[in-house]
Image 1 (spheres, rainbow, N blue to C red):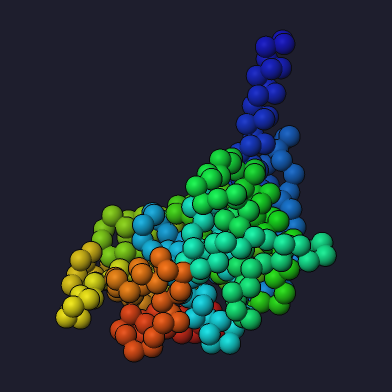
Image 2: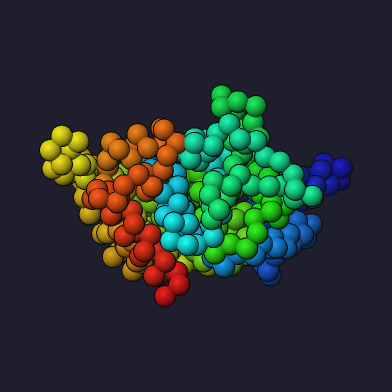
Length: 298
């Protein structure tokens, strides 16, 4: 009998673990006895649109796209928050040239780092002692940190909260979908080649299972502009993002070419979008941003 009771206790514990990570745990009619209680309430943030930026795999330039889109939105008069939730590789501060900043308190709220009067940033990078310190956390720790970054930060009124998520479909994306208010949907970043678009499809299906719309797909590294002659080379191919957008019947927000100047801008901490308005890459980023606003607010 004791053995059977021990087995039941272990099974109940497994149920609690399973249900606690489920996006429908608070409403599920088949929740098992002893399962975790309902999810915490939505964070109280004055934000019109929360935009999740996802990628199915790493290395597609998702953070670069997040930084330049957030900056472009703020340049167009939008009040923007940029939330870096890539806990294990928080690169947003480096790309904005603010990696030396640390977070401070304003009353009982955490004060975000203000890049401009229209753009504020929160990142785990502001909390670690140096850039080589790893974050070694399991899911519950990440969820607690995300709750703090949402509810205990002095964001002020926002038009957009752009959330840069780690690659894949794990805890961070689930937690934002569960806890953030006014989640408008997800932008999926991919590169043109099949190995990337395969994973982008998984991200789209993940968003669908959460009951959220795919705002659109962005094809990054769509051709490369030669720095010497300006000719476009299809280094990773071209058209893969548009193809899966058509297959999934979701908006295609546009293409951004692979440009050495954009890489330099990220390394130097000066977003490419603020550098110049006469290059094809700049025009591509601005066009993607305008299409994003059209889909979200149209």
